[in-house]
Length: 124
Image 1 (cartoon, rainbow, N blue to C red):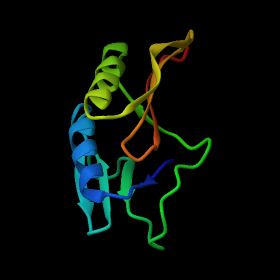
Image 2: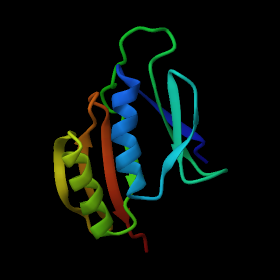
Image 3: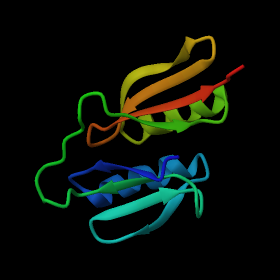
């Protein structure tokens, strides 16, 4: 259902250092890109996350209510992603914890202020 999500950055090299290290924790890597945009994923046909300098060359805007959710695979995986993001310079937006009986999540803002959620969801 989801092809890719794009988030903005003001410094593509700094963003790539952050996402190269963070997404490696869940088997993600940079799959393709050009000077101003890079696409991350786990392989062909899977959903991707793109990081880019906006095409119109204006400042990026994080957008109130926008968030990218990255599955951690387990509660330990969520904890690991959260810790890695903080180590890489992200800011805390909500430490790992159970939000609902079926949802365990953690929240950070990346180096450009984009909101990320790391989660594990167990439905039914």
